[in-house]
Image 1 (cartoon, rainbow, N blue to C red):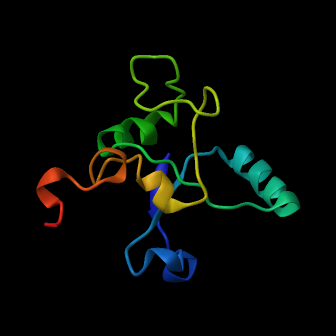
Image 2 (image 1 turned 180 degrees about the vertical axis):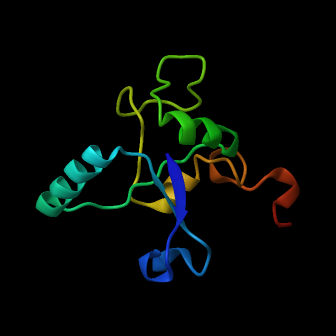
Length: 112
C-alpha cells in the first residue's frame, strides 16, 4: 500500500483547500476489477472514523473487524462489522480528534 497526494482537480471541494490523499493498496489485477465494477455500478466516497493512533495499523494491515474483542470501542447498533459513512462529519465524530464522540475536550469548551 502507498499513499499519494491528490491533484487539485481530484480533491473534494467540501474539505476546503487542505491537502488530500488517497491510499492505493490493491494489486493491479484487483484494481482493474474494481475499475470495471466502478464503471458498471458507480462509486462514492465513504469515511471511517478511527483514533489517530490506529491509522498506522490501518494503513499497513487494512481495516479489521474488532467487534466482540477487547479492541472494540463503540457499540454495534447494526451488528458486527466495520462501519463507514458517506458523511465525513459523522465518521469524524468517532475519530476522537475533538474529544470523545465528537465533543470538544473539556479544556477547549467555550464559556457559557
